[in-house]
Image 1 (cartoon, one colour):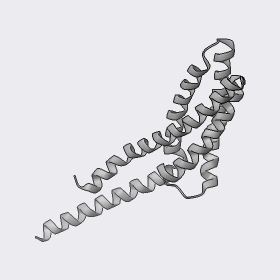
Image 2 (cartoon, helix red, strand yellow; image 1 turned 30 degrees about the horizontal axis):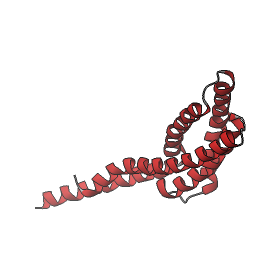
Image 3 (cartoon, rainbow, N blue to C red; image 1 turned 120 degrees about the vertical axis):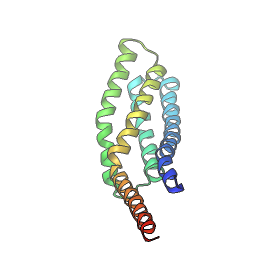
Image 4 (cartoon, one colour; image 1 turned 180 degrees about the vertical axis):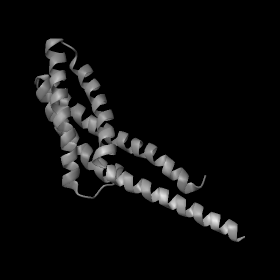
Length: 161
């Protein structure tokens, strides 16, 4: 296995690692803002969660678009795609958080942590396979073409010799 093949195989892991680091920083922002609103100012769960979620979305999208997925193409379209994810996730997560904390008296932080984990996993998959998918289709095609061309060239060299 040559170095280019090894680096192509390492790319998904490195990408996931970058995403995790940026998501963790967004999680710190979200947790800090949530804690400030819920614990210091005693604001109910859902407004505390909603404001902190919006702040972390903006932070996470900006950093992951630029550094993890390295996408400079059509930022408004990418932002619209992320918005589509949050049009579904935000009302659902706000609703279940409110129901679990207000009706079932679950701990705010337990519900918050579970919701952040669900958001982390589903947003990564959505971003990778929908929001920034074109980049991966082209990268896969280019890598396949490069490997095929290299193999073809090697085969021709063997036949000549």
